[in-house]
Length: 447
Length: 110
Image (cartoon, rainbow over all chains, first blue to last red; front, side, top):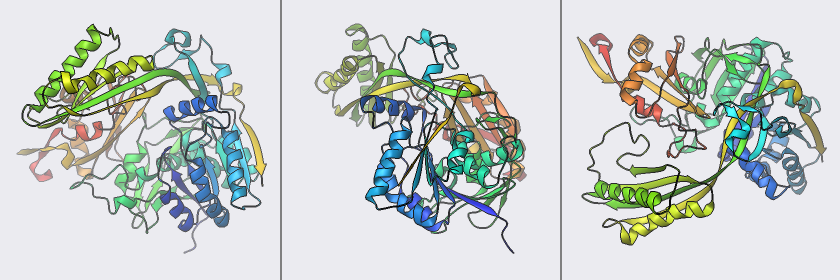
């Protein structure tokens, strides 16, 4: 039987630090029309802005050079378009660096597009309402680092139309990175809510890479995943109605099943009937899944309605420093000694140092992640005390590390294995801006 | 006669975060267990069993064609991954935690 006209789209990365070799494998053997590298999170975007402030030629994904070096020649040879938000806070610099790498590799005739316009700090002011704290920006008392609107397919379509082989964006809604080339290929109208909703479901399923191919799924004895060490990244065979088969290379590890697809379909979804992106209000509640051979699941009946009137903006603020320090206790009474050590740290941080923020005390091996949920018998004989707090300055953060390290001589018996680290932090809140105030821009570079 | 089993025996789950909001989707392996899930795994039961970790109010969405439920919790993550002092600031481990919940199956269902 002749296959209907399909668009083959794969995932090259599902988060900023994702693996590279599954992407290379997929490009080599997947016969892809496009591969998408999704690399921005709420935190990584803010860190990108920080990098860019320190050096105007930086602010893009730290793995961009390594990734481009590996995939540019393969994608050019295979005719596979690359679309990525690896531009993070500086798509222009990322595109320029990509051009330099292409030149070093001797690649000719390559068109690289930088999509910008997501940076909207000029639209955000002291009076801007922030969604989650439910206050105005000025009331946070914090310094704004950056504000980025989630752009949609409108921002990417002109770059495809201009014939770009590599399209590098900043903040674009994750599913939109996938939806744009599908919508272009099948000429879906920008108010064809049914197909845009269906394509958004496909993009959403692909956007976290291995999370639909057996990653983040294995539970030995209950959910077995073959060859997870070499889990492959997904690809979708999309048809003009927006239906798709989610699959992976047979040579790769992992699996695609209705179970992996279901888990990913609702991942980070709230109302399944109204998954909002800049392009559409997608409706996943009627999605139908069917097996279509080994590691092949057919996804149909995703739908959509009119897109939201406003665009969501991530506003990032300086979040001070996260201080974390740990020390271990083992043998009989380990939990009691760790508990005592934690109480000493809390007491001294409060009384001697006047620390005003909360200090979290975890007894790893007894109760940590779900500390207050479950009462464990404190019989564990291998316990790690973790103390954590937020500090507004490096020196305040250092006090916590000092107090935990001092337990070595001054604390309970037999503590060892101190480690401490201080991590600069950002905080992010959401705001909304009118779509008409945001103007995506396109810049094309060619070798 | 009915038999009590951990939810893990009949269902799988995944949780995700957006800012300070968490979602937790639970799916039964076998379609015939969907009613067990729907009737016994309520927001109230989650709060009663895991109230120290999960916070209300919890909104529940039913997905009969996927044989699953989606629970959504606002203001759930101690400020979210950028603010929480919890090692699991995403709340990702919650999906495994809730599978410890006991559910009653009719003997013929077990």
